[in-house]
Image (cartoon, rainbow, N blue to C red):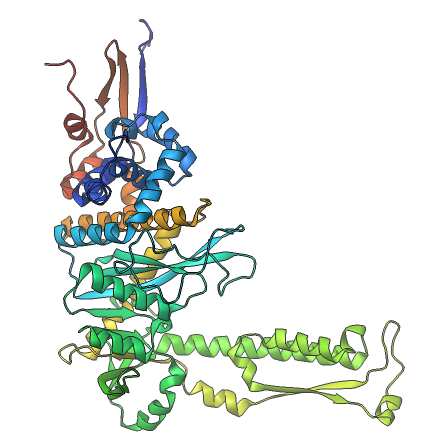
Length: 577
């Protein structure tokens, strides 16, 4: 075959629509731009509404996370400037920053309105919500960030514009970085999680403060019907349980084991254990494949209990779910063995250093610091007892002459490992406890399955920090940072909602991989989705190219319009009629 070339150069360029092909229709169904404009009426002097600008910024974070200064380049390369009818050179960081400032002043109302619209439009059940927090790290001074007043009422009692952003300050992680916490309430079922409504908390606040504020905001803005709120051990307190009961809701929460270990010991012989129906995906696979690998399991025992309401001193009827995990038992045993071996070897080395008279073993304060560092936060450290024993003059004289660089030791390091205490602690390996006030119509097995779905929320945090790149954040204003985090909460809702809609549309007899297809895989299928821009005397004319079979299949299942249909709806037809 012979190839030849002839003709003039055509004035044509291409843009890559990419993941916008799936995110744009979904953002339209979520009505994000209109909701923002409803709360932020456009100023007549504004060339573009805040809803237009922020929905485009939201699309940019979903498709290709980047700094605000790089949004114009992305808008031009992806064709977003055409679909939003905002020229790329108009999307400077000042315009985006002013839109974030406006978002901050109504952030709670906007987030709640988007959550209510999404729950209604996509039929998300609100009878059970899962709550979890994650941290966002910052580096820099952030001198403008101030602590929030303790007595300041939450919005809407205090307008969002007057409610300060989360305080960027040192937290529990490291001393050289600052942080805030972001809490999210998510709808969770077998198809995964959809983060729905969130709130930022100062970096030095704990889970008790976070969930108290989140519950109050839920009550004030969404006003949900009685629900079951699922959370982790860091949010548990009797006050939290009492607060939910007073609001007419129920709690399912893991509790610190040491709070209920005594009660467990008292009732252990009378507990009735049953095998839980919940199994991880890996354990299900092992059983289906008749694998020879270990088959882990959970055992449950339910105990009726009365919790004292710290606010009214009344009794709150509840149930304790004691859980035994064979996998956790093995992990605890292996972890203890490694920790004991590491501590024992370290203490032996340190004892030899002290006995040799090395300069590092002659200062008692220095030895104590090394022992404390060695024991660290390991639970196995409490099984060791140690002390520095002073040597008498006769004992020092009886010692051999110290080698060069050493001194005659004045102390002897003595330590003891309490094997009986370690064995007694091993009796609790694999045990944990949950507390619930849910109706008794929900069995302990069902409630345990609900709680194990908490991992879907943690997976959402992973998606937040990787594909959506919520961190690092480089905005200097704490208000704009809080606004951007709120906008990214909507992005996370969009991200998880996309895979949920697809999974709901997949036939029941489809392969397992297709039934569990993730948003990341959908985005990968639309990595290349080009449009052709042809220059004419009237301006640019856009030509969509044919979709691949996989792209068309995805859009058909989602019931989303094709790029050609999107362009037909958003752009005037050429040539003009």
